[in-house]
Image (cartoon, rainbow, N blue to C red; front, side, top):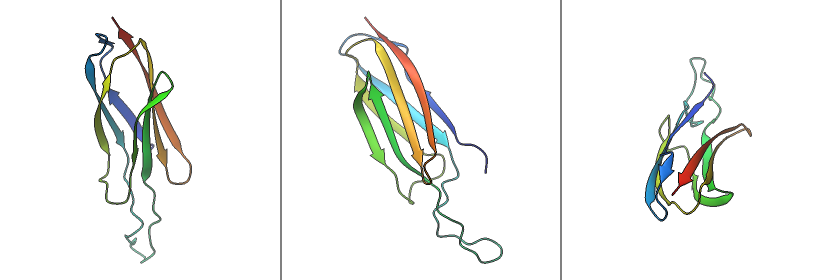
Length: 108
């Protein structure tokens, strides 16, 4: 399996108190642990099990993901622009792997 690739789509600028859209996607096979390989052995579960977004250090969105989520999970949510700063995005995988991105937002 290839290395998961996280991507986000978020504006660079917003007006104070404007509500803006955040779209997050990570390319990931999301193996459920319910399938078997050609030899009949169970393929171990390996999924993105959580996603979180912090805006200037404050948690603004969090999701717990389970086996029923499709490969390449896409998450869309909305945030109110308060101050200029950073948005930090973190995806956590079974086994402890963590994938992260960061974006900047300028609020006028």
